[in-house]
Length: 289
Image 1 (cartoon, rainbow, N blue to C red):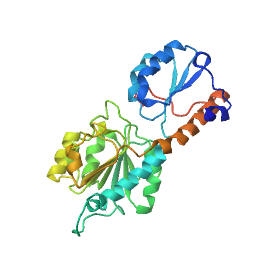
Image 2 (cartoon, rainbow, N blue to C red):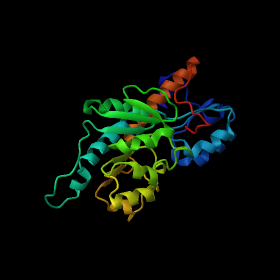
Image 3 (cartoon, rainbow, N blue to C red):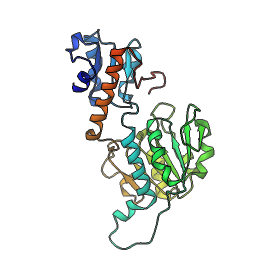
Image 4 (cartoon, rainbow, N blue to C red):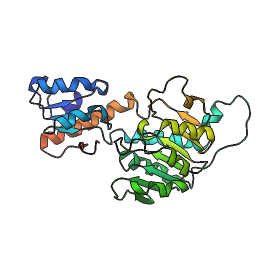
């Protein structure tokens, strides 16, 4: 409410509101009725970058303007990706569970070949964090556009050509029908046997059964996952059993980190709405993000 008022907007009852800030991603089921009951609403601000629970209602209401949290949480998620990368490559996951002195394992992030899937906000924040490590950074994206400070940018269809030289594969892209299962058995086989995978995007990008097989057979170095499929990952799932699989419970962005950032986005967009400027984080309904 404060974020709206600071920007020059007024918090109103739904019946007289022109815009709706939907801050409860777990109750997407309540949104259609809210919109049906309050026809004056013509702009909806969604809380997260991922809009999968809302996608069908977006497509059924093309006359509305939809914005989401694209880029809002990119900085903390990029920071978490770096933490997972260092922990994975340096063997912290294995050492953390050790009960006695063990053999040395690990490899440098410094000078590594890093492939990042996705060219959005997480990637834009992650690349500067990697700069001190003098990495070669290849960004794979569906739109072949330059990414600042990336060594090279390649199209999605060329993913297989860069995997064999990848030390660290970071998944930081939107989940769409085209990107679901983008990393499966074929892609895992193409990676070097000491490569690590970091997933801070969505669990559906990575075929879980194929990852379990790769970890079991030692065909990759390991995986660090902030997201999983299924999620939450059930007790007793095979991924919990691997020393070289580090799992965090989707905390790249926590509510404590996220709420102030979402409030900043609400303020920015309400100011733009009041002044007639273009809104930030507009959803491309056809692309699904």
